[in-house]
Length: 411
Image (spheres, rainbow, N blue to C red):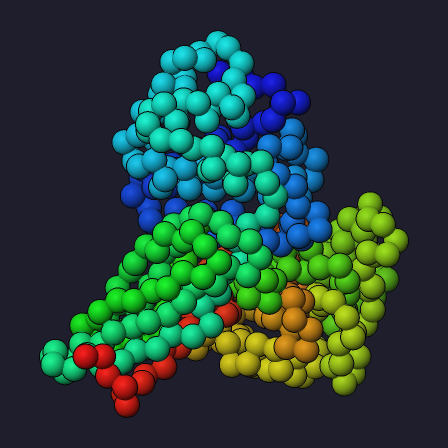
């Protein structure tokens, strides 16, 4: 089945959804499937600021990561949302029907809409108008949640009430909500959003403690940079960036960190002057530039300055020591260690502090060339050049603590 890209390119989004995403689901790897959904949402939010957004229908080809985030990632999530809208069986029957009807022929977005509408026996005009023909994504929040004990019921029965708010314009979408309760219990709900304010009221078998919005990235939405898990690509996409060198070398023996600096300099030659990255030495007092995201490159010779930066912006998540590093309470030791870690810059919302720390020059040399391939993790620990462990810090701002109102029980 062919497409005419100048009339709208649906092929890249569908291929991304089936090959890059659905394969993991098909193989039963739920964790990797969720990771792919996270990457789709995070790519859009970092590479597509609201002022540069455009509808998926206008995508024709990929020129940069900005186009990729719309034409590949958002378009893939469009198919994921369409699958949820029409149902599992109907979705796959419609895809097969599409192939049967257009085998060897050209098809356009309007043809997909017609086939899915016919197979589902639904009017899907609103869906394609919302996700295909208009730019943007919903901005969601849950400012407060209140739980009250239910009078006359067992002692552990509670009524939870909350309101989900869309702060820009109303989108229709299914929103997954995870309710955390005492004793490590939890309950998952799917709330169909239709308006700017959607009330939730649910009876629970234990006291609720917190609510997570879309914990498995099942929908597509706009998330503020400061609320996303901090990653190297925060630095890459920031309007203002700095590289702070905290290593020593000699003209006859350049540090392997120089390879990272040289690569960034090459990348920056292609950017407008106003976006060029500042490259400077780390100040003795550890002070950072006033604006933007910062990439610090260094090793044991600058440990004290690096430690102060980590302590201020990462807290106790990452700690350096004489023999290695501690990440989330786990100690890692050895001369082949290198750590790439990103944390939100506490004094500049939306910007990050990213650190590449290596125990030895050899440890740097083995990871410098591939550094930017690890742009979607909050931390990556390398041992002798191989990834030993990596992960993401939890999202900030998507969890709402539940307030207990025991003085006014539900009757």
